[in-house]
Image 1 (cartoon, protein in one colour):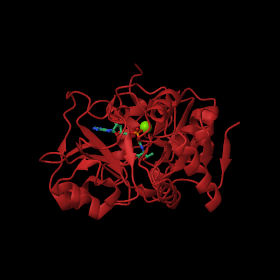
Image 2: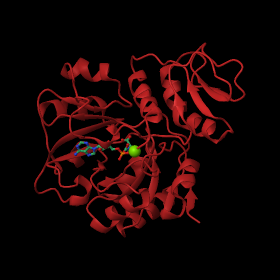
Image 3: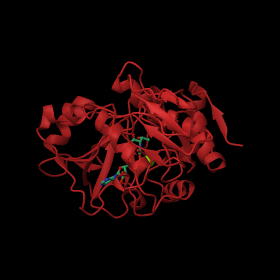
Image 4: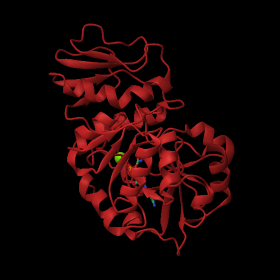
Length: 317
Ligand code: TXA
Ligand code: MG
């Protein structure tokens, strides 16, 4: 059985040791739990792909403690500096040109000329990075294509025995993956909406280009079906159909459904983000034909919530 442990100082030391020896450690960030390995170690990184069943062409995010630790990894741009200063540590990933001498396994960047870097804010993630003193590659700690984990129990449910250690820091405070912005060129481009709302980024660097729907895949989080529960998902529902579970928001609460949850009875998008993945998992476990979801406003974190819901509802390939 995988060991699941509270991140005391001695456990953090042990986790750092496991990582330095090429092990896999799942740890909480403020967005979702990550499946971490030392990003400079080819074999450790290969184990990440194997554990998740992740397609080999899907690059990983490199986690660092702070902006200084990211200096040797990437060629920094003005927009990158501005956004790192404003949002790091926090739920923002920056895609930059890869520094040619960066000691990162080529498996992490899958041969791309760019690298994705992020400094997470969650205390456990920070303490682990500071103890390990090496950059950590960490995708969300779920089987590829599934719903991301926001608790240690979700991690064990999905990846169980593939891990050496799970650090249990409680539920994630943001609950949605980081926003991914490509700041390697002008204008910056939004590759994945996430925990930092678009509006907050655009206030600092101007309008973000959107990645065209038909563009070649730059961020496989963009693949149509992703974050998918096993049951069909129906969006923008005002009422449950017979046999459907209902995921409500605000006053649209699914009266009459045999199974229902509400992302935020008060209509708060941050609360909804925090609840989204855990509630999708819970409804998916119920004996229902499908999951109907109330409309979610498009502003603020609503853009990322709607993005994840559209992918959960997309035709499975
Ligand atoms: O919040 C998060 O970002 C979580 C926590 C653990 O940090 N991590 C996460 O990782 O969501 P993952 O692997 O599930 O998603 C990483 C996304 C993918 O869509 C990937 O394609 C994109 O980042 N990405 C990574 N490197 C890239 C690159 N060089 N260029 C474009 N996209 C990249
Ligand atoms: Mg993921």
